[in-house]
Amino acid sequence: MCTLQLLMLPVFVLMLPEGAQHQPSFFPTGAVPTPAVLGPVTQGGTPQSSSVETATPQDVPGIFNVGPTPVTPSMPGNRTMDLFPVLPICICDLTPGACDLNCCCDRDCYLLHPRSVFSFCLPGSVRSSSWVCVDNSLIFRSNSPFPSRVFTDSNGIRQFCVLVNNSKLNYSQKLQKVNTTNFQALAIEFGGESFPSALQTQLPPLFYRAGDPILTYFPKWSVISLLRQPAGVGTGGLCADRNPAGFLESKSTTCTRFFKNLTSSCTFDPALDAASYYNFTVLKIPTGMTDLQNMKFQVPVTLASQASPPLLVGNTCQNAVSQVIYDIETNGTFGIQKVSVSFGQTNLTIEPDVSLQQEFIIHFRAFQQSTSTSLTGPRSGNPGYIVGKPLLVRTGDTSHSMTLLQSQGYGTCSIKRHEVQFGVNAISGCKFRLMETDCSRLQQEICQTLNGRPTPEHVAIFGNADPAQKGGWTRILRRRCSVSIMNCTSCCFIPVSLEIQVLWAYVGLQSNPQAQVSGARFLYHYKTIRDSHQGTDVHLTTLVNFVDITQKPEPPRGQPRMDWKLPFDFFFPFKVAFSRGLDSQKYSVSPILILCLFLLGIFNLETT
Image (cartoon, rainbow, N blue to C red; front, side, top):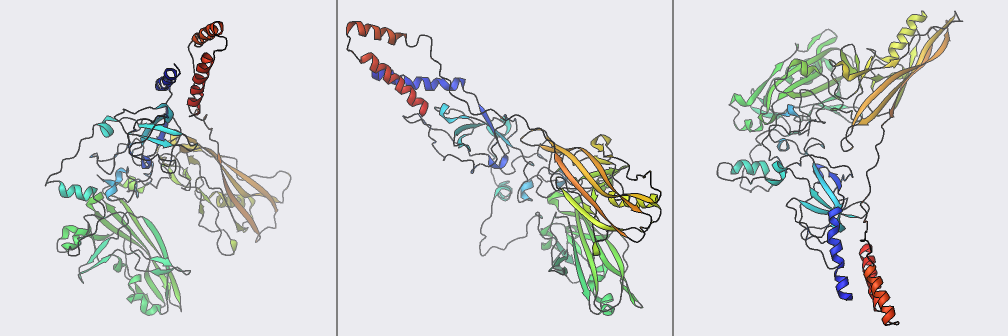
């Protein structure tokens, strides 16, 4: 009898999953677990994995206990034939009309297979996966046809997780057929790095990858070279002319050149001559170097502005190059389609050890973009702000960045200003010399110095706000900067400090929150000066403070607990047996022993 009652215990365990509550968990695309099939449980009732080891939270980063998210899992590699990934929002598309580096959902990249050009995909630019989990102790055997695996969460509790079904990508995916026609294409698309044969000649790649140097060709000397972007090195920032430009890497560099004999360098140094920056062609794709006579692989560099050759006139070197701007249009794997260059030139006075600071800018954008799109400034998020990106403001119909004061030599106020970065509190100051005697004009001049030119009127709610859409901006709250003082005729009440307060909050899903600006205001602090202030210095200060007003939602529920429920009069048979045993045999202990063994079995199940 004792043996039969103990064998009934596993029956209750098998019935528990009927009422178990699912605990969904979300895993980012980069942490999708490997499917595994669970084997049968052991005699002790602990499920065992038949093919993989149990994963820990360190193995799978980014586990969040949130509600189930109906997100389509990403396919491995680039096996979809859609032109662009089907994502409702591309959060890393920050530059209108240009291909953002490693943003696999950016439509301006025009890439069928983004990972063939990018080394990796930024988080949020590819599809994610959704998993539903329950306590592993509730599972006896898994018969699910979908991918599943056992994980251990941060509390050491084993979770059994099943990938949410997506019939298009996860369940009924057909195997690709390989034949002589598509064998080479599939090997290039999905193949990894390998060791080439010693006798094999390495051919140039079929297209430029992100960060690759850009090939150039000098027809006059039949020489293949690289497109250079000189950069400053060392403490003096001397120009390193051999620094190559990287494909799809839009950036700006500055460096300094020193001339011991500017009289001869003016007309003979190629760094000062604009012609040396466009007397070559750019190879559209790397394979163009195998057929240099075929002009369809070469893109000429066209002039976007007038550039005159350097000329020595008396004691002045005229038309020396001070700025070079390359504008390169690309079309995905079809390579470079158009290259234009514009220059900034200056005049140098010939003197011993004269120096010149040069700036080199390379800008990549999508081919055949409209002029209005290409002139739009870069975004600070899409849609929500990204910490560290510029805080966007609007004056009239013009969008620009909010700025703070910047000092120059001897601490005086500079025309250049610091850019306000979203989420970064900052303070800056400088010395302002009071030269104006009229109080109202002095107040106006100081207000323009504190606010910046032009004075911001609205702040963008999201990082991708369009200046033409008025609903995407909120007015900056402020009082009048110029204030008059009543009972003092020989006094002037001037602003000396500007405090910018920005209220912001996270909105949207907890798995992908977006930062938005709720409001901003300008607070001015004043100081009284006397009429005899001309020629004195006053210290001006600007500061910005970001305040997070996000309302945190309620935390998710904890792990499901076992709720043991016994039927009504469960102990009735034992009471009857116990009462009969007392009447028939006073010293019989068999009913008591059976009851104790039964309760002991239940307690053992709870502890395991």
